[in-house]
Structure formats: C-alpha cells, structure tokens
Image (cartoon, rainbow, N blue to C red; front, side, top):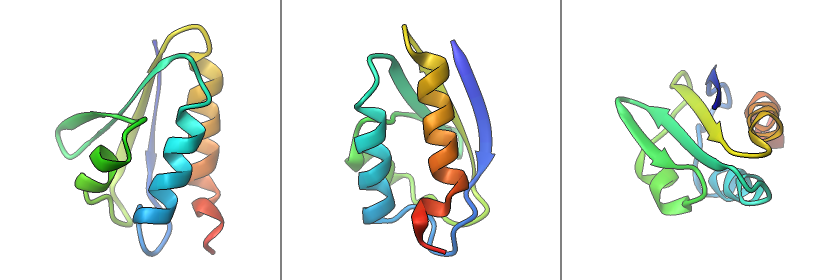
Length: 88
C-alpha cells in the first residue's frame, strides 16, 4: 500500500471539473484507490463520492492506493492536485 497526504491549494477546491479529471486519472490504474479527508475514506474512482466530500482550499487529503501500480497512481494523482488542476 502506498499513500501520500497533500493539501488542496486551488482557490475553488475540488468542484465538478477537477473531480472529473481526478476520477479519469484514477480509473487509468488497476490499483484500488481511496481518498481520505475529514474523517472519511471514499472510493477515488467515484465522482459522486468525491463531490460529496466538499473538498475546499486548505483541506488535507490522503491518497491511498493498493495494487500493482499503486506508486504510479499516487504520484499521478498527487501531481494533479499539485498542478491545481490547471486552474491557476
């Protein structure tokens, strides 16, 4: 299992467009990928679950991946959050 904690930095947080990009990226990997924030753990391949978390700027999230390509999955999703989803 590989995991990485990161803070959401884009001004608008994770709304519909970034959530969609996040899910599209997560589904490219075979590993089981979860997102942990605000005391909840959800399936990172579900746009509804991500949207329901209300991830705003400053929220700390942990990306957890378990499977054959877990390290690559965590790195790709971390890089996506670091890039602020190309919004800034």
